[in-house]
Structures are given as C-alpha cells and as structure tokens.
Length: 190
Figure 1 (cartoon, rainbow, N blue to C red):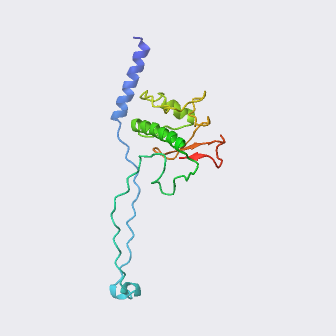
Figure 2 (figure 1 turned 135 degrees about the vertical axis):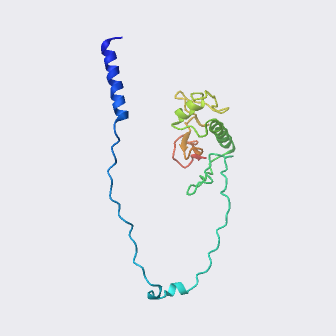
Figure 3 (figure 1 turned 90 degrees about the vertical axis):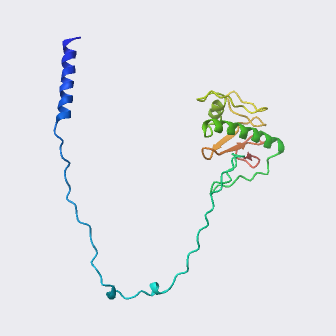
C-alpha cells in the first residue's frame, strides 16, 4: 500500500477516536414555566346555573353495526363509496354487458395478484395486463376483444376503452358507443 493511503487511513482512525471520546455537550436548558393554576373559587360563591337544574334527556345509544363489507363481485360499480353513485346507463345491451364483464374479470384477476388495479392510460394498463408486470402474468386481453396498434383495448365499435381509476380497487370503464365519440349521450359507462 502507498504511504499516503496509510496516512489518510490513520488520520480517519484518529478523527474517529477523537469523535467517540470527546465530551458530550449538554443541551441548552430552557427555563420551564410552572403551569398556570386557576384561582380557587368557593363553591358557595358560584350562583347555580339554570341549565344545570334542567335534566337533559338520556342520549340514545348509537347502534354498533359492523361496517358493510365492500361488494367486489362487480368491482367496476362504486356502490359503497360515499358520495359516489353508480353510473346510470340505459345504453348498455347484452353484448356490451358481456364485454364489460370480461374486462371486469381481467381487472379482478390482476387485482388478486397485485392487490390493486393497474394504473395509467389504456395502453399502459393493457401493457401491465399483457405481462409487463413484476410477476410476468399474462391476463388479457379478454376473449373476443382486440387491441389496436398502440396496444389499447378496443370496444366492439373499434374505439379505445376509457379506464377511469376511482380507487385502488375500483375502476370505471367508458365505451364511446356506436357513434365512436367519447362523452356523448350514447356512451356506455360501467
């Protein structure tokens, strides 16, 4: 070993020994104030309160009901989130309902493996579902449904499905419907 390296090592050892053996510096003390004490008041000196004389009715006990378990049989409908209502959709037909059920099952399988839904855009979600995940699990696309060249899941009219992440385990799906334009009256939401 080079003499300079040995000298530097010895210097570090000396500094370390000095640091460990140096006397501890006491923390600065802050003078403590005694707690404020309210002056004593004689019980006879306080006039009786008219509120204290009236008896209040006994409060009814709050019933101890266990919280309602989340219904995850259909994870796309946020039925148990306060302030969030399930979308009302009269546009859904039997074939679209089956498509959404298949997507729901695909998301359920992903959530079972990873504890939460995949996140991101349609292409990012489908990439994760198609095997680019930490476990290499290939969970999609659903049978009978296809992807476009950007790897986005398409609805039955050839338009990418819109994934809206509500919580870690709830996702809303939106199909553009027959007019192939999102956010119009014929959209299918679930």
